[in-house]
Length: 275
Image (cartoon, helix red, strand yellow):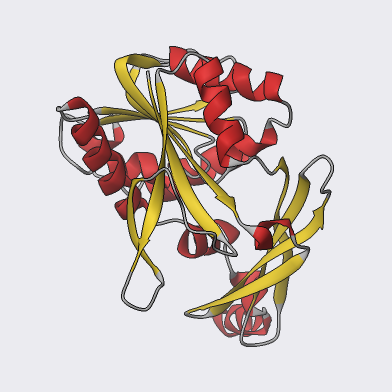
């Protein structure tokens, strides 16, 4: 094949065909710089010291683990995920992009978070609502017990959650990004069991689409349920960190301890559990 033919073939590909779903996901959903700052600031406030070892459960591409070790030579991260393909992507595109010295301080493990054995961490996280896959109190408590065992004596466990009336609707929400549109699709919600099926789609300016790039089948847990199960699992304290508002009433990205959240139509919060 000539170079002209190869160029012509590439030109015929749609934007969807040329896109990488993991890159799109990270740009749409994650802000690992902000996450690292929140984890470190909160841990220092609670424990009066710096956290050095992070364990990232359901780590996916391990972008957060890679960001964690960028803090300095003393920092280490362990990423755990059961999906070998996404770990391989992370090793190539995220871990491989780090300086060699930093790469040695990130360990990616293909394993089940319920059975994995790792050195005790200062901070353990389960973000992007990934632990919602545990759809009964027994399963959730078992995971929380395992997370607690994976922490140092003064370790702290962080999870995120979402809620509000809109979380229980079957709906689509579109967010425009540079070069694509992110679509969050709540395709099915059962008010009796709180089963929720969600998809992520991507749309592009040339009209092409990636439908169901990601699909999740979860139980939509509430804040009081999660806090209760954390305490049942042995954590000494479980605190909700609620997002503040700017002068226009929009979220300002600053999360602080709060016992009385706002009754917003849709919200995202963190729960911070102290061992």
